[in-house]
Length: 361
Image (cartoon, rainbow, N blue to C red):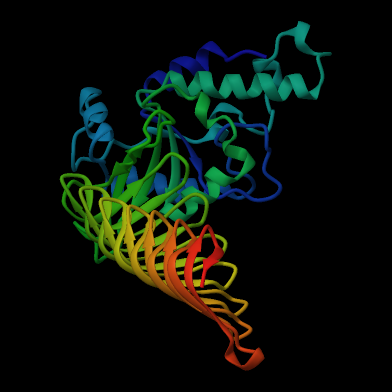
């Protein structure tokens, strides 16, 4: 199978080779950027929006620099007929195979045919002005595409040749209109739709942010949904979680409290997936300072922490009613302390402790 010279020349006069972002279970898993059944109608809708209805703005950052280097003009439609649908190139349904296959390839099998078809698709994309365009419309659709098998070859697209089309909401900067942002594997910082105001930052792994932007950085209030289904909703500064915010992990654990330069820092409450709850001071993502740790099975520690461990003066109340009150060092009773038993008439061990052992009465 080979790319047909006539189609290569056709691609050279176009801006993007496009695909619908949302795939279904019947999509051809082997093809790069393939949409699956029913994609043509949605692609046509997006093509009309981008090419003639209101155009598509180039995003900020890498998208901005690369787009203008290639002649992308802000605020102007890229022009009618500048986005190629897959069907125009006889892909991905393996039609017109006589144009795409050498006679010597005929007996190499379906696996070889699919592999060759992927390379032919890449070749057509490489010959367009900008490359491949995922017609997501919204970040959730782009994330769905990233998690699908249809995106398996996206890392093989060369730098700045893979883009996503994302639309703002009515409340966002500039109102409801579209933006084209680069989503290459080499770019781990994400790409913003606009430099300032309310907009999106789209990441190659499907993660996305929606909220305030300043100089293309996440700033102010915003919500980040990561590719592994973790969610942060709160304040940002210079692209980092900073201020007050709530972070929900995929396993159901939740931290709500203060942040500093991307770290849990200050006062906060962490509810673990196990049901344990810590409420108190944090420093650089670690329990540090005064706080209360309540275990799901009933034990409660209230007191000092250092580097994530019980340290300093504290009180540990066991689920069975026993109580230790005294000094801790690196998670162990160490120093002066009193252990009172809930049974046996309230007998107590009152004195010095070392490495969790009572040594002097």
